[in-house]
Image (cartoon, rainbow over all chains, first blue to last red; front, side, top):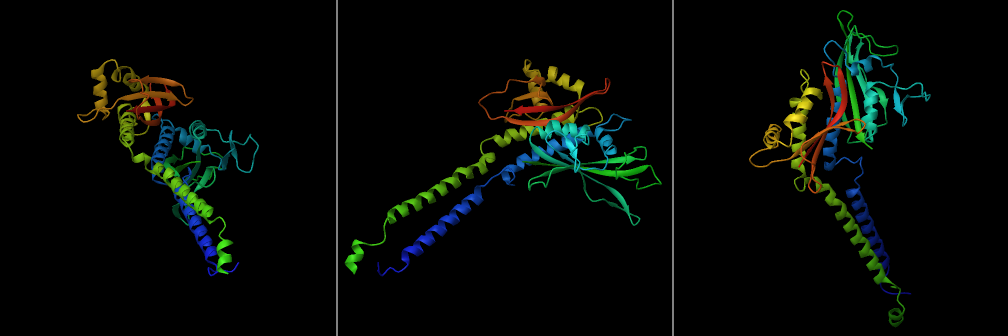
Length: 196
Length: 168
């Protein structure tokens, strides 16, 4: 029971277990590659997402001469509410009755492409506002909300110009910023995409 | 006292402890190396080259060769140009025309020649058009998909579709 080694074995045991724990923690930290982890291997995925997002906005913003683009129609007809994907429809936040859902050219394309490929997405708009006689960009407002994007999220954007003849629907916060000209507002539509 | 300690020491199964410790350590090392190589996979073989080639070809195709008049660089494709490209310019049965088109897409040079397959796919997944040679099963393939709007100004037709460019 009594020898001259004192607590040598206990110390060795503690030291060994601490080293092992450090090794295991280091190994897990170094290799835990989840789909949301930003890394060199996710660069290609990000560039694919960027191309896809830009293609979505490009195709929606195409218009024959003399006509409005689908994207412009969608912005004009937006009622100022925020919508959330519920697995079937983009329903109004805080009003879960399916009659209050957003169905337009943008949501049809997002549903057919991004939802089918499991790509999380949100749509934001920034428009101009008059504040103390100075025209400044508004804060970002969500049209479609899907939580906070991950570190490797990709943002693509498109600016559209609304004229006085482009009448917006009731509740739409985009106002006429210059009553002396034909310009109504300039709206930037941002599509944020990330892999879940 | 010394004799008693030698006979009945409290080391018990120290050897087993060491074996277990080494085993866990080696497993950790193996775990690290098993996953580390995944980080370098994109930089191995020629996967980068064919991916870049397919990206370049799809860009030339969508943004220049097939672009509808007045919409260069905006992912809008003219239906007539697409049909002409599919049926005539990218007709694999005529090798001269096929090679010339590959050259136009930057896939045919004195150093390296790629093959390419083009398919147009509706958003519901049905193949609308396909041209070029069959895709091989045992080679690395670089693929780029572009979402485009196919338009026909004279009829008013417009439909969103994916253009898939596969290069090997």
